[in-house]
Length: 103
Image (cartoon, rainbow, N blue to C red; front, side, top):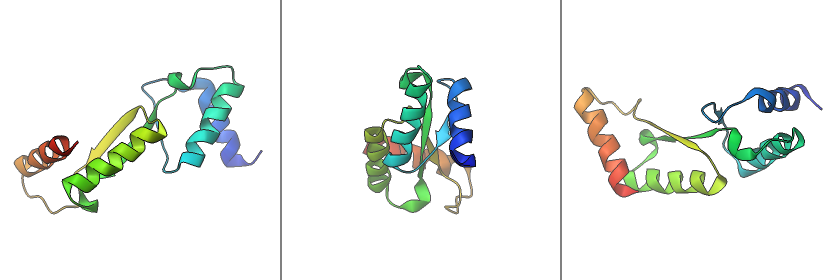
């Protein structure tokens, strides 16, 4: 087992539902679930966080990305409104509302 695999395997020994690993592929999630099962744990005991960046497109595109994450089995979702050029808190909040409405 390589260093990265060992780190993930050690993580599943102590990770909790409110913890999270940020990963981007279904294969990586399947591998993580395999390590969790090898430890005799339920995959639902270890949180996996997905990330959608508002800068990556329209609210509808972001909603589609969130749907993909959901299909991969993530337990948590972060929506990043940084790097869009917003100049006020209201713009960030409005962006989050549009994302929510597109779900």
